[in-house]
Image (cartoon, rainbow, N blue to C red; front, side, top):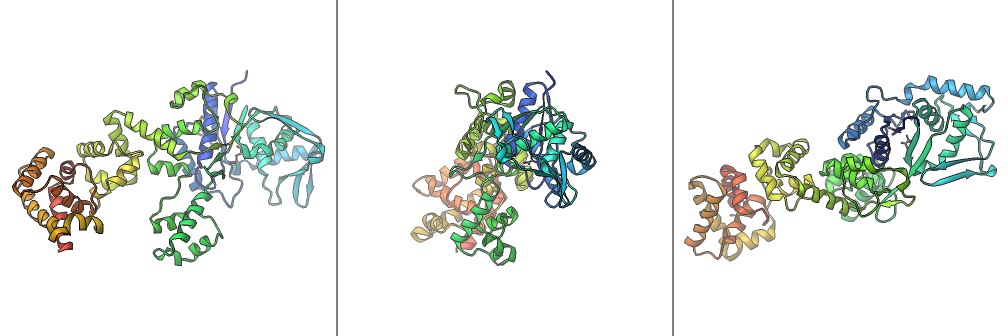
Amino acid sequence: MPQVITRFAPSPTGELHIGGARTALFAWAYARRHAGRFLLRLEDTDQARSSEASAASMLRDLQWLGLDWDNADDVPRQSQRLALYHERIDKLMQADLAYEDDGAIRFRMDRPIAFDDAVYGRVSIEAADLEDFVIRKGDGFPTFHLAVVVDDADMGVTHVIRGQEHLSNTAKHAALYDALGYDRPVWAHTPSIMNPDGSKMSKRDKAKAARAAALKQGAAGGVFEQKDVQAFLKKENDDPRIAARVADGLGLALPEIEVADFRRSGYLPGVLLNYLSLLGWNPGGDVERFDLGFLVEHFGLERINKANSKFDRDKLKRFNFDTLMAMPEAELAAKVKDHLAAQHPAFTERFDDGQLARFVAMYRERAQTLDDYAAAGRFFVEPPTEYVEKAVKKNLTRNDNEGLGVLRRFSETLAALDGWEAPALHAAIESFVQQHGLKNMGAVAQPLRVALTGAAVSPPIDQTLELLGRDETLDRIRRCLEALT
Ligand code: GLU
């Protein structure tokens, strides 16, 4: 048996899509399972749409996922291999298997052909459905069909594992393999990943979501007057960058579609891969949670499904939450720290490691993703700029500004307090409640919460105060009193 060689061959025309990551994962796992090689290749013959930035981001995302490739020193780019393609095209011309037509070159697809797919089974193309197809375009560039076959053969690829959208191209590829005298590889096409509504999961989903929200909410901010946004709203394009701007203007979170989106949302790469591996494959039995080591041990083409799979965000969230909960505290704190440092540096600028550990402990039971920490604890790094009206009424201004009075007097207690640790703060609140004949701790804690966060929710008030620090706490109380009296 020759060594197994698989590859992932993205076109660098955007960011790495979650479906691409799943395809890469299967190709990687198959190579690792068989002690083979997993290679990367950049299919950048579409010069207008390909970019260096996209290529770099794809490599970065694969790295983040932990899918290592074995040709890191020399990742082939199709744009640099034109001589090779031309040589093979000449060979086909000389054998009269291809001919010139209007400046392009076409391959003669004149015999019925069949191939076997490891997932979809035998596929046959009847004589009536055969059509000569272009292998070199008028601009001199090879087409995808020619380049993919020449490259896979040249790189010794034994197993072509790729998205199901290429199944219909594969008869052409099989014919080219035969005509060029190459051994055919094993083909395995993977089912598509669908949204819950049955549409294919695609980066256009972001545009759809942004547009729908924009139309529903009407004008928001200046974004809508911009020309490109106007065109976007009229469905003239689906540019994800415009979608992001519109979403920003509306305070809307777009659905995660690309790997980078999931990273920014704070999913763990191992969890994402675990979940992705279940889209179109399963290890049998009831086993659902596993690591890459398990996948490598169990992965095989025979358990890939034909049926498309649905992307279930809630399930992914549960996987992520359970994994975060199961982590030793120090490991979790380190993960949160890395995430915050990369995505929300205000937190790591403000908190030292000890404070960060306490911050993580406060939100641990509720944070489903690493980014939930930043969302829930935002007020620690950003003082409130406004106060929720309902919370103000209920906790500060009701009964002739009772809460504001509590705040004013308690801030004097806080200013004079010895020490600033949670137990001392807790005791201070308790004795203040007794001294002033208040109902309960909430009579102090709720006014504090509004002043410190802008709303009436926070972790236990003593811990919140401790972490916020004395100066910041007193400052925020002062500003709240100024704003409301
Ligand atoms: N560049 C192709 C794509 O991104 C890959 C085709 C293949 O894997 O053969 O869809």
